[in-house]
Length: 153
Image (cartoon, rainbow, N blue to C red; front, side, top):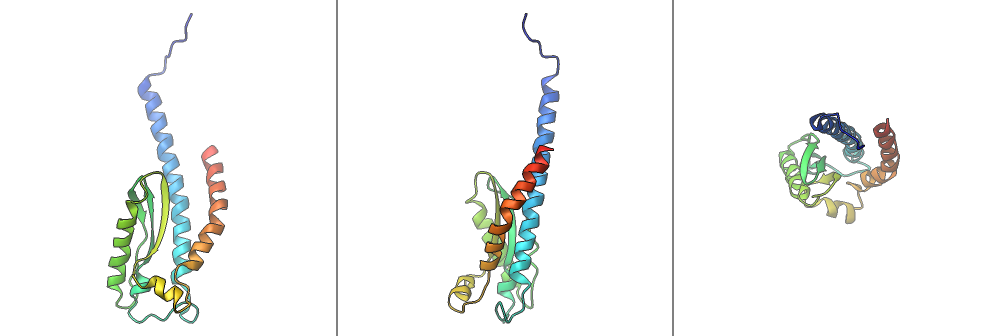
């Protein structure tokens, strides 16, 4: 005597899809929280310990995106500082460009979209994204552990 399936395949598909949505929602929430903290770390420091805003473009170009299989699921509000509307545009454009590089899995991408951000860090010895990266590397293992526990429950 064999085993007979009594549950309709459509019911199994529905349950799998619901679980998939739950996993995505919890993953995006965790990455979004970390992204917001990274942006705060990068943007919300006094000019004495970061850099002097002349146009506001550099600070305005800092933001993050959550990417899944090459598709942007969510990105931060690139808040304009001073007359930094070019920074907002460049930050979003860089996110769009980088999203294509993450074709598999989830990625949290934090950017400073102005092309001189690296120069400010290297030549002027100012912190643009370095502390945000260090913060993310420190916090990510704990957040992933917490996410695994949430997914298991």
